[in-house]
Length: 432
Image (tube, rainbow, N blue to C red; front, side, top):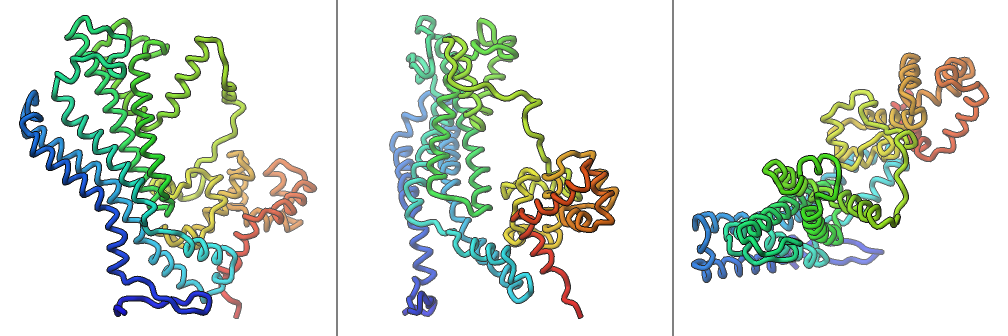
C-alpha cells in the first residue's frame, strides 16, 4: 500500500482510500475528451489552412481567432476544478471552535454537518456536462471569430439570419444577415460572460452540480434563439425601439441592437416574456396574469440599512447569495464564518440587525429605535421583556403594551431568533 494512502474507519471497519495521486488522476482524466477535441481542431486547422485563409483579411487573424476560441471554451471546465480546494480550510476554521461553548450550539453542529456533507470533488458525473458546454462554446467562438470574415457565408439566404428578407438585392441581403449574425454573436458573448460569473459564484458557494452545467449550456442556446427573434421582430415593439428603428436599420439602430443582443445573453427570460406578451396582445389571447402594481409589491429590504455594511462588504455577501436583509436574517453565522473575513460577533450582530429590520420594516421606526439604543432584535427582546422599558419601545413602534407582550411570545416561537440568541449567549465570557 502506498504510504500516501489514508485509512478511514467506517462503521467500525477499516477501509483504505485511494492515494492522492490516483485521485488527482481520476479527476483530471475527465479533461481528456476536451483535450482530444482541441487536438482535433488544431489538426483540422493545419490541414485546411488554405481554405480558412480564403476571404479572410489576414491569416494571423484566423489563427488568433482559433486560439481565442480554444482558450475561452476550455476556461469553464478548468474553473470547475477549483471547487475541491476550500473544504479543508472551512473545516479547520470551525474545528478550532469545537472546544469552546460555541461548539455545543445548534448553529455549530449544523455548520459542521453541512460542510462535511458537501461534495466538492469533480467526478464522472461532471464529464458529459463539461464536455457539452466546452463543445458548444468552442463551436460558437470559432463561428464568431472565423465565420464573420468570410462574406461568402452570408450570400445565401437562411431562415435564421435572413428572416423574411427576399434574396433580391444581394448586397442588402449580405448586410442584413451580417447584422443578424452580430446580434446573435453579442447574445452568445453575453451568455458566456454570465456563465463565467455564475460558475464562479457557484464554486465559491459550494453549489456546483452537473445539472448546473447543462443549464448554462441550454441557456446559451436559448439566448441566441431569443436574439434572432428579437432581431427580426424589433419593429413590433413600441417605445424607444420604435423611435430609433423605423423602416430600415440606421447606424444608431444597429448599435442599439448590439446592446440588446448582449443584454439578452444576460437575461433571455425577460425578453422571452416580453415577446410572449406582445404576441398575446396581437392575437387577443392572454396566457399569463398581469404583474401587480408598484404600490402592491412588498417593500424591498436592502442591506445598506444594516450598520457598517458598506458596498464592499455587501458585494462580498452577494457572492454568497445574500442580497437582502430578509436573506441575511435567516443565515447561520457559523456557516458564514469560514467563508468571510469577519469576526463571529460581528456576523451575529449583522444577522440580529437584519431580523429587527425584517420585523419592523418601517425606516422611520427603525431610526427611532436606534435613538432609543435598540440596535437589533436581541436588544428589542430585552427591552420588551422589561416591563419598565416596554412602554417606550412600544411607543416607538406605535403599538400598545399588550401587543408588545404578545410580540415577546412571537419572538420566543421564532426558530431563527431562538438559535441566534442561543449562539449569542454561548459567546459570552464564562463567569468567574
